[in-house]
Image (cartoon, rainbow, N blue to C red; front, side, top):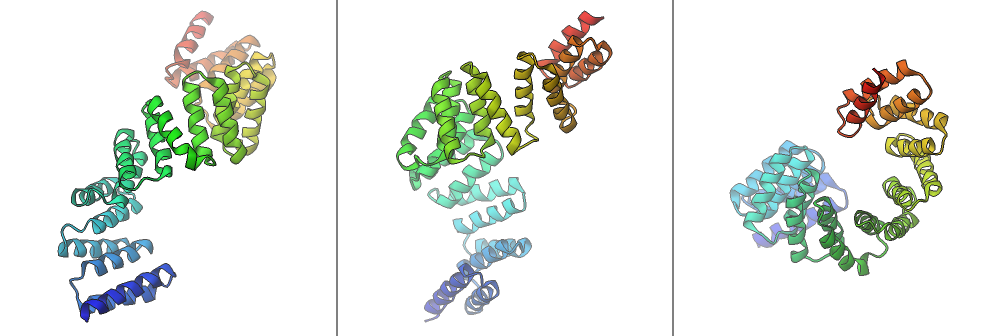
Length: 323
């Protein structure tokens, strides 16, 4: 009867938690622990409640108690790791999530959390491993989108393409899928297909500035500079602080013999990012062409000071020719 009573209290507590009635849920878990203080599930559930209400120290205490009672309780390790994640302590997060999968390699939540953690840490190789594990445990097309992302990050473009095509039947209305396909086609110099994919993304997510910027760059590659300029302008309407779009628009204007508009755009970029190497370099070119050699030299020196691998040597070459 005691076991049944504890199960009922845990069930009632979970229902109250889902209903947002936290104090009542906590009371039910406490009642379960009064019957059996060594119930690991009750400690885990109570810890989860505390974590969701940002009572992190109390949450950790409950998880550690659950693990003390059941040292192979993978769910408690997972929840403990995620509590550390909420506290932005990534090393501890990784440690406890890895403990979870060491006790239960098929713990989907732990594997998925590790995949996301490694994405957050910029470790694409490990993220790939855990996304693949997730898919083997519980195949979901949405996981393939994340797997493709980390594959693209590692330049595994053919594998990423195959993964996205496998996801396509269930994800054909997913704008992120087409955005990634566009990136792959762009990298493979198939700019026409890239344009089609980026437009498909924007048809579903018109305010996706990254996809719009990628579309503009693909349009430039196919000689459609006017269309590219229009896309850069749309980006700036959505996000006036998008320095890359502003710089690219200015470069096209400069090539179209409109240095005044280009200079205005570069100056706006430099108000936002005073050490932006691209804006500094092209501004110095405009100043040089306008005969303002004093300001051109200052701007070239500022370009060199950025240490940018592309613009520094170009600026040094121009500055040397002026001396």
